[in-house]
Image (cartoon, rainbow, N blue to C red; front, side, top):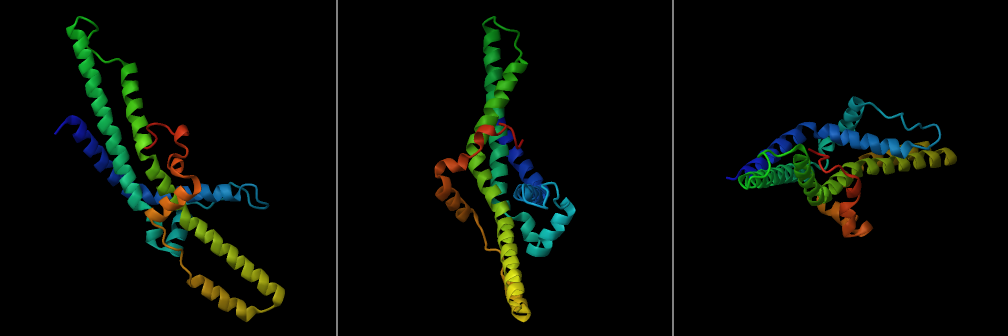
Length: 222
């Protein structure tokens, strides 16, 4: 097995283990950011007033179960394995070529046989750029799946507020309790990889899968 393939497999395996362990924190962080943006600019609702990480974790477990913390885990694992594997594979591949090039130059009496710092930077940048271009669609889907349940919950809260307002105006307290009980029984709709991909494609076409790629660090998830 070549060193490039071995490095790629090792990177993919290590990335999967790390992703499984830290994924709940990533999910909560994504939702906190979404919540902060949604609150920004609203009266009596400062953007900084977001719940703590532990409180948010407990809230997700209470409302959605443990599965809510791992929403979008499958495509995220695929993305992590692909991202880490691709980066370390191409890094080692370009590294081998750079070292072979230096050795060939030394054999012709040019250079001192060492790869300079600038060359290593180029190797890392090339590997990272390929990593981003090839895996960005996966991360677009992961983010969409992570935030979907949060959006569903906001919709339910809006419906609840509308029911309360309607009940206050019509003074039908008993009917309100029945409607709220029915509303509480409604669970967020399942949202898989294919529905997320279809939604992205319908909104912005194929280019939507590379949305934001220009602003990403080539080694943003390494």
